[in-house]
Image 1: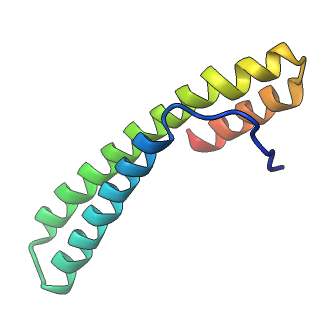
Image 2 (image 1 turned 45 degrees about the horizontal axis):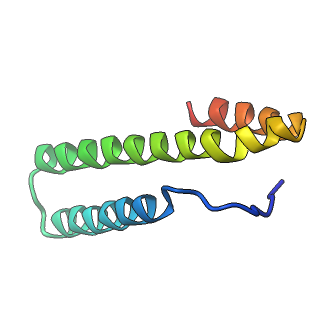
Length: 92
């Protein structure tokens, strides 16, 4: 279920910047594959992207807790808390 947020996330710009870098990195890796670069080099770059995705995921989770979940608890909205639990379970 998607909710409309009435508050701003403080990390949105940072998340978008990180995601743009990840997308650029993935494009570079695609070019590496197209050019027949060594598989070991490709795997190392994929590991870097995996790490970057984990990093941006942590920022999103923290921002969500700091804003959405704090607000949900104030409003006794346990459905949002349960949705976060489900999302974290799927993420992990």
